[in-house]
Image (cartoon, rainbow, N blue to C red; front, side, top):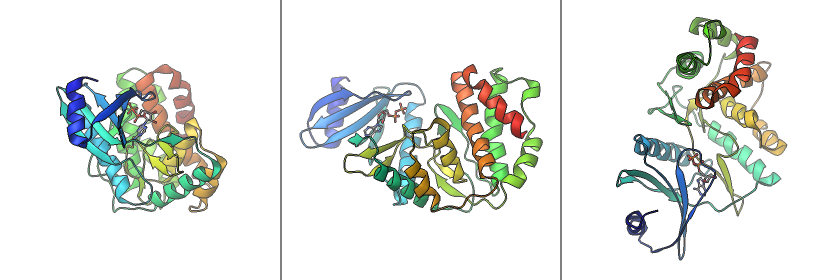
Length: 286
Ligand code: ADP
């Protein structure tokens, strides 16, 4: 990190910076732990052209979750651009691996987040899923929202990238017909939106934090579908979560259909290794 940025951060924090160390694990931005004599902060920086927009949207998502007072997110301290480098400065969460009781708290607090509702599916702002655009255009029905704002744009992108061919994807008409009976009675719930196991932290004192959200109001099972796609969440997490929500005879089908969105995103971001999983869900349901 250059000295100019360091002194800008020091001014923002009103503290002298004693140490800057790289933090690994992110696939989009550079990340650093910034230490002062009394505190620690987390900084993400990126010089790609839309980075400032990405960070503003991330900060907004963290704030939307934070305001619910259900589950914590790191407090954002600054989001700006300096010498063509966008940065997002937030509280540093000194984390540990999750114990059974941490997973229970996470399951319970996620369920509380999912109790937060809205009149529409979507959000007042679009955001990103990974580095891809995610439309949150509000809609009153989940079938329409999930078809038009989730599956269709990713299918379209996969077609453009020639990752899916003509007979391999359904029309939006066909998608809606299939989803209609499975999505009856679904109410909007505030979602993290990208809940793989790298997107929560457990602080040293056992407080769960959500990071890197792709928030919107959708069906609460979408977050659960993502936790199950790549794993890393314990039985305690699911037991506690499901003590707050009922399942029905369509839950397992919906979980796969929600995983289809994330698999399409991975197909579009990382290519053919996700083709088999995408195709098997497309064939099974459409
Ligand atoms: P990217 O957007 O580039 O994928 P991430 O948000 O995933 O970056 O963060 C990169 C790494 O930093 C991850 O290992 C994550 O656990 C860690 N991290 C993210 N936010 C914080 C934070 N506020 N405090 C401490 N570590 C964090």
